[in-house]
Figure 1: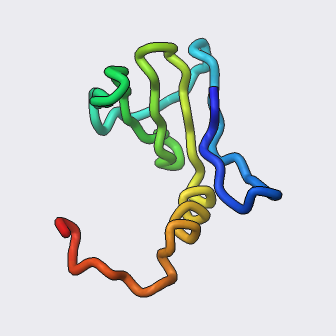
Figure 2: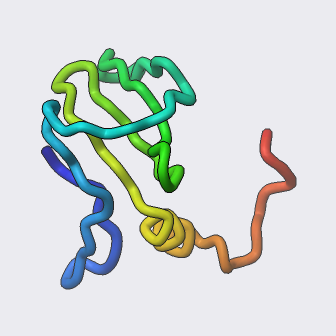
Length: 92
């Protein structure tokens, strides 16, 4: 299973962690199910009960993906959060 990668071609940082289905994770479900239109795979979206980290569970494999707040900040910086915004609002 491929993980999200950011950075240059010479130095890539893998973000998040994937756990096997038998891993015990105490979580609060925030979005019961989301079906990916392209693949048809359904996912459950939750947050960890202790730190609020985002958690995604695949119904296909039952694998669990987590992402820390530090990793979310890295994604935001890589996406350009510190550059001027070219859109007018959320729905643009």
